[in-house]
Amino acid sequence: MQAEQHQKEEEEEEDEEQESSGGPDSAFEKSPFQLTAEDVYDISYVLGRELHKLSSEPRVAVPSKVAQLQFKIVSILEMLEALVNETNLTVEALKMERDSLRREVEGLREQAASGSTKEVNLGPNKMIIDLTDANRPRFTLQELREVLQERNQLKAQLLVAQEELQCYKSGLVPEKQDWGDPLQKAPTVGTTSDSCQRREEKTTIKRLFAFKKP
Image (cartoon, rainbow, N blue to C red):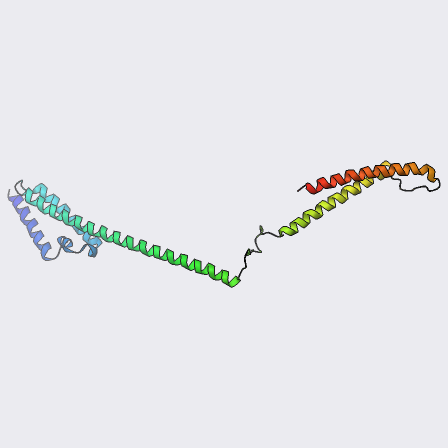
């Protein structure tokens, strides 16, 4: 009993010294926004000390010690609540500032876009083409139509030349005509003319089909 009484007296003296010198308990008197890391360590020390006292106190004194410990725990919870509320306010303020900056940036982009359009002064149905773009359009629609039409004409001329060459190869059109005997050559000339005419008609039909091809 004497040893327990002596330990109790030492703890009371230690508490009095800490209170007089502003020890760990002084952290509970500070504002939550003024706490430092050292203050947090002091608070944890005080809680550990109070819990240790509960195990050594007589049962009669336990309720009062529990009440003191509850008071300190409530104080800690109030500090945490204040810090959380302040953090939430800070987050909301940052969100509002972020939204304001976004609107400002969008406004600047719109001004830049409208300003560049005024400087270029594009007319209706006009567009800006990047000459460094490999996929940029290089021909107008009218130029493409002319190219396609010229291609079809060249294909038709090629077909005609091929048909005429075929006539020469088959002997329907002789390369050298003998004018010495016009009576004997007349039927041949007529036959040749009719054959070439039919060939020409076929060539014309092929040309029509060639124009329809894309």
